[in-house]
Length: 264
Image (cartoon, rainbow, N blue to C red; front, side, top):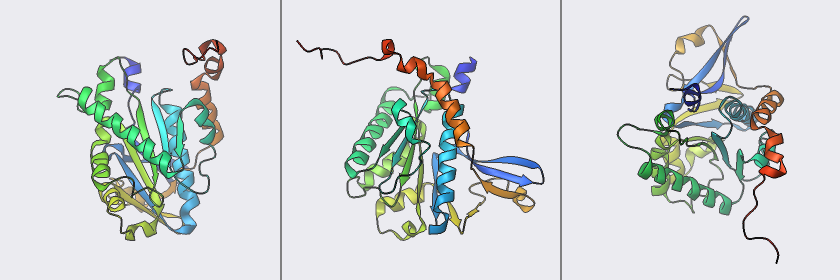
C-alpha cells in the first residue's frame, strides 16, 4: 500500500482537546468509528464550542490530502466560523443557512450515501476508509455540522434521518451535531433520534464533561487538566491554502467553463 493510500483515510479519532500536566500535553481524541458526536452546551459555553469545532475542522483540512474532505454546515442565524468562510471559494466549506439550502444539501449527501452502498461497498470493502485503501478511485469524505436548534425537522422525515445517521459512517460521512442543551427537551422525534444515535458531550459553565463513553482512559483525568481544542487558526488556514495550490487553482488555463455557452 502506498503512502498516499494510507493518508487518504479519515483519522481514527476526533481531536477535541488536550490533557495538560505541568509542561506536558497529551492529545485527547474520541473515536471517529462512532460516526460523530453531539455537543450540547449552556448559553455561556457556546463560544468555547465554536472554537473547538472551527479548530477541529481546520486541523482536519490541513492534515488530510487536499480534496479528500468537504465540510458542510447546517445553521441559521448569526454567522459562525469566520475562519472557515474563505474556504467556500475553493469548495472545501459549504454552509447552508436557509431551510431550502439545508434540505437540498441533505438530499445531495443522502444520495451520495445511497450510491456508495449500491456501487462501492461490498464484502471486502466494508466502508469508504477501506475502499480508499484498495482503490485508485478515491472517494471524498464529508463532515456534516448540524445546529440542532435550526435543523429542518418538518422537511426531513424521521425515517430519513434514522437511515442517514445509521448509514453515514460506512459511506464516509461523519456528523457533529451541536446546540444549546435545551434541545434535550425537544419534542421533535428527528432531533431525539440524532441525540440518541451519537454520544453526547455536555459543556456547562465552560467546562467539558468528559465521560467514559467519550474517552476510554478516564484515569488520566485524575491528574491532568482537560483543555478544549483552540488552535492557531491563521497558521492552519495558511497550510490549507498551500496544500490547495491556489496559484494553480486560479490559473485561467485551469478554470473550466461550461461548454456551449459562447454567444453566437
